[in-house]
Image 1 (tube, rainbow, N blue to C red):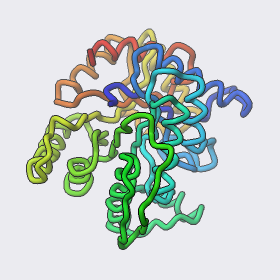
Image 2 (cartoon, helix red, strand yellow; image 1 turned 90 degrees about the horizontal axis):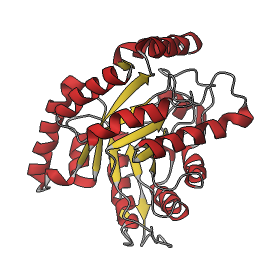
Image 3 (tube, rainbow, N blue to C red; image 1 turned 180 degrees about the vertical axis):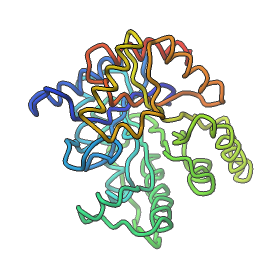
Length: 316
């Protein structure tokens, strides 16, 4: 289960040519593993997101990347944050995540969501549909995927997907946790209560108590023990050894990625004491941990290690 996850969301690094891109990603994953992060995540997108750059900025397909990272790490769990359900047939996704589990020695995790980036869908030919369409697809997909990951042979004649005695051989080496990303109180958190082992909330810290209350209500109605579900919240951080260095890192990030200016108010910027205090406050709101996105300076050697060394003691 994830309590302290590091998300690699950005592949546009200054002065890093294409042939050095993967080694730069590996360095972050290794720093995360060595400093106390329990999970390394990458995004499941094919174009870079508007708040992180331009559509034609580098973006590596996530499951290929995770399988490669499995060969350069040994203890961290590996997952997308989160898989867009609309990009893959659910039976294929179950096989893909199982393959990741096998090649990583039992370290795969499935993060999944309904999908939302319309430009990506329209440009590449994936059906986008309505908000309701995407959530109906996700619900059917979860029924298929959970069954296949559990060693069952699920059959479903659904409105969106059909499978008949779907085999998944070899089986996963581990019990693969399912994390659903998002904070929608009516649909997303109901699916968490019904299908997931973990929830990764997307919301301001001030909204956490309300989200947790909504999740608890869904669990009670469905007869699920709320304590079975691990809840993290996604966060954005730019930390450095000093406050001045952290600010300089973020300003440099904004200069090369102007879209990042819009996320300044959501980003925790500062030295270890400042950042640690902010995360302690978030933890006090009732979540079990965090996922951490350090797009501004995660590529700088030592920054991810400093983050892990600062945040891991808070989790205990």
